[in-house]
Length: 267
Image (cartoon, rainbow, N blue to C red):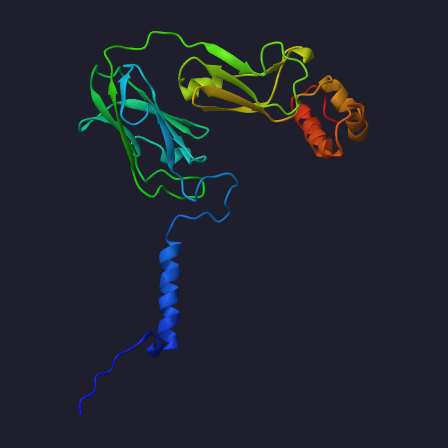
C-alpha cells in the first residue's frame, strides 16, 4: 500500500533549524543599526525629518536656499551633488551644497523661475559617521511664487531677554527670527561675548531649528572674572560661588578651556 509522508516542523533536523535561524539573523542584521547608539536619536538609521521649504509648499521665494534637516549628524562628504539634488522637471538646477550641524543646504547658482514646480531629492547615498545610510530616497516638491523675498529678517525675541539678570549659569541662549532663515548663515553669525570680561568671546556651538538659533556654550557662564577661575583652587572657588558639589568637574573643565583661551599663561 502506498504511503504519503507529510513533514512537520518537528521532522526537520537540528542542523536545518540551526541554519534557518542563522539565515533569519542575517536578514535582520542587514538592517541599519549602529554599534553604539547615541542617546536622543530617533530610530537607528539616518533620515530626513524636515525640509525648508516644506513638501508641497507654494509661493516660495525665487532666491530661496533649500534646507534639509536630518535626525542626527551626518558624514558631510556623502552629501554632495549626486546625493542632494533640486530639479525642474528632469533638468538639474545648478547650485552649491553645504552642510553644518544636522542641516544640508542647497544654494542655487541663479534665482528659481517664477510660478514653477521644483523637486528635491536626497538619496540613500547619504550616510552618518558610522556608515549607516538612509533606508530609501527622500523626495519632496515645492512651487515658486511670482518674485523674490525682499523683506529683511529681524530678531523678534531672545531667551534670556535683553538686560535679563539672575540667568542660570548653564543657560542655553536662543534668538528667534521673524521668518525662516538660511541655516548656514545663522549658525556662523550667532556669537556670545562676555562683556564683564572685556568682550571675551564665549566658546560654544550654534544650532538652528524652525525660526530659532541656539547657542550652547562649552563652559558655564561664570559670575566671576576668568582670571579668578584660574587663580583660585577649584574646591575653594566652588564654595565661594555656592555651587553644588556636582559642579566640581565642570569647574575643572572650565579652568582647562580658559587656559586654552590664554587668559593667563599656562603653567
